[in-house]
Amino acid sequence: MQGETKLDTLLAGMSPALAPEIYVFATRPDGTWPKDLTPRMIFHESEGTTLILTQSQARAASIAHHFPCRMITLNVHSALEAVGFIARIASELAAQGMGVNPVAGFFHDHLFVPADRADEAMAILISLTSRG
Image (cartoon, rainbow, N blue to C red):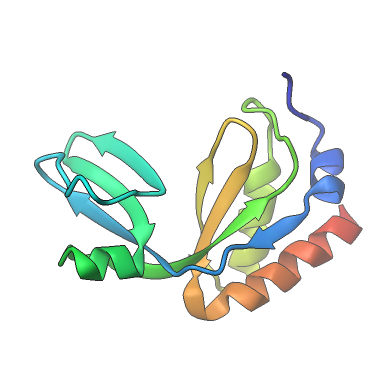
C-alpha cells in the first residue's frame, strides 16, 4: 500500500480535518502512565516518554502538561519517504508566526498547532490546496 510522493499532488489532494479535542504534550521520565489513559501518541526518548493526550485526560490524571493544541489530520495518503510535504506546510505556518508539531502516521500526517490559532492554521492549509 504505497502512499503518494509527489509534492504537488500531496498539497492539492490534502483535505485537512480539525479534531475537536484540545491536546497537550506531557512527559513521563520513568516511562509509565496510568493504565486508564489512552494517549493519542507515545514516543520513547532517552530522557523519558512523551505522551500526546487530551487536556481533559491530563487534568483528570494530574499529569503536568504543555502546549494546548488542536490536531489537524492531512487526509491524503502520504508516503513515509515523501520529500518536502511537511517542510512546505511548516514554512507556510512559520511565515505567519505559527509553530507546528507534526507527527507522521503510516497513512497520514497530523499537525498539532496552537489551540487558539487552529482556525487560522486550517485557512492556511486550505489555501495551500489550491496553490499547490
